Length: 330
Ligand SMILES: Cc1ncc(C[n+]2csc(CCOP(=O)(O)OP(=O)(O)O)c2C)c(N)n1
Ligand SMILES: [Mg+2]
Image (cartoon, rainbow, N blue to C red; front, side, top):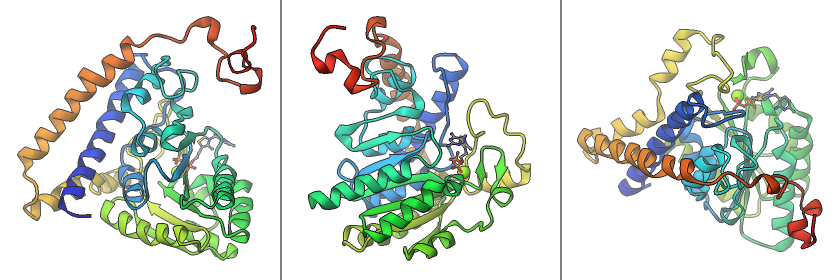
């Protein structure tokens, strides 16, 4: 990444942080309902990986902690916020909500609520890419606890057997809801678990976006080069509870402090300032612009957008049952 790229990525990560913090507030204000899983702390993961990939060209899939993945693929943040507000202008027309963002135009193939559900879907996408002969890759971002699902093992086996163009990214934030990884998982280093499938794997610091980018370049090159799947584990931490209904009382305070000193935004910011490529004033201006955009463009768009009409509530739920798709009357 050159200097301009690093500054852009810093801005994007700061935007991601502020966007998620504003979602938290909107939830407390009861503007957002249902489940809400936020991403602060993990920003370097999706940004580092997608800088090495081709957002909008490669197919991306993830779990329920999905707002920033959708935005990094190119989905309009206004359409993401509107989706969280349950509005017709949302990227899933207000029918999905936080866990079910989708943007086919930007090849963001969805957030999914079922832990481990996206693994086989990513393998299916990679199979389709291979059959069609495209140069895209499928990228599957999931958490550490998802690797204890049967789908993980079935999907890795098939992906390796058929040499499919799929990159598995494990965002290892050390917890699955309130359970620390060493209480649920026999082998704590996730990258070691894939050797049984003959898939190359690496582990990297998920708080340093430049390190993530460097590791992801190797991974993406491998997969795009027709060499089959790759598994990249990123060590990271979420700064909030698992979801809005989690009081976050189970993590040692010293552990939280340790990870907050490794904030991905601050690491990149301070590195740029030290190199003379950024000033604190510029950073503060960047932050002000972001806060202004969220408050004066994104939130009003979500707030002022219409609700889906009640008579069309089931529209888009199942294509085969959809009279709007069939063209018939209901
Ligand atoms: C099949 C299934 N089982 C259980 C759950 C409940 N559940 C929701 S999130 C979660 C933990 C997942 O943790 P991890 O994969 O590490 O992702 P993180 O939330 O840490 O990003 C569990 C068990 C679920 N959603 N789906
Ligand atoms: Mg986790």
